[in-house]
Image 1 (spheres, rainbow, N blue to C red):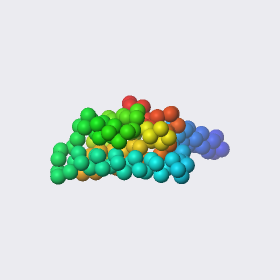
Image 2: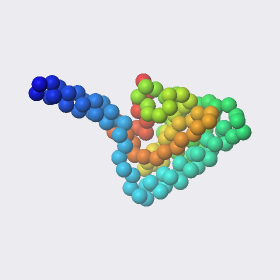
Image 3: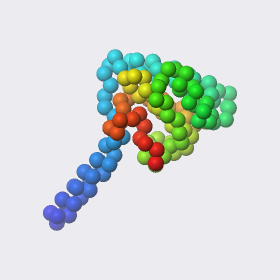
Image 4: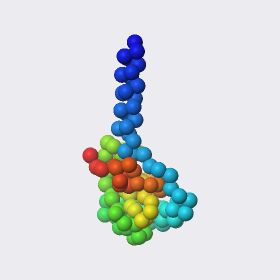
Length: 128
């Protein structure tokens, strides 16, 4: 019985470690304030892409909207199995120089968030 509990605990720890690469740290208050301002600009640009019931934007349109805000290292792609959030539409991320601005774009839903880089060093997990 003790061996079974040890194995269960080891499995739980391994599963937690497998998910840890997606964990984000806490932004400093001044960094968070700047990132929130960038996120607001990203949201404005993305909302223009879907205003008036337009079709879901393509990768190039989302990339242009995110890049136009001044973010660097911009990535736009369909979500993969390692990505959190909706499984359809597009996900995106960009770097302010001190924080990540990331989110998803679907025809009826746009999310924009801020955070630190994930444990593997990027703003999004590597595509699968």
